[in-house]
Image 1: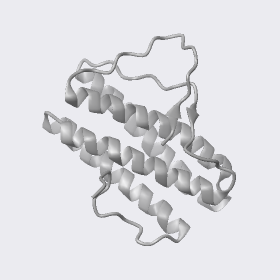
Image 2: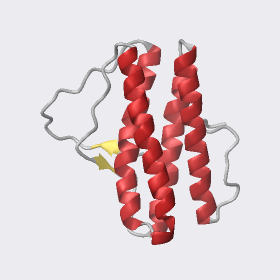
Image 3: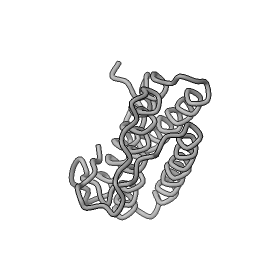
Length: 161
């Protein structure tokens, strides 16, 4: 998982909400921020023939980030800010490592969105979480397929079952 690096910030980070649903949304949005950062690294180390997948994934995470911020605003909750940088889970120096990072980020996002589904207190949030989890699972499968891994899908995305 990508983790934020510490640095002084011009704006203080909004506190994580206490309500379970809002806290899960907050956490998932932090993962989206990290994934967007991480896909910049993936892009830098991917081959030209994978650019379409990098662009698709980055656009998907950006759109989901914006929609999640809007959903949090509708709920009267302050969204977390992106970190200035993130620590990667390992070295990324070649296309294989870039694809592995992409799968890891999609799996991390699936875990976060599954938590949103589990904690959701209304249908709108639950539906948003289901859609986000599904998109992460599909994108992870696309990366696994490019790497020649089998199976390309997992039975329960975002879980350890």
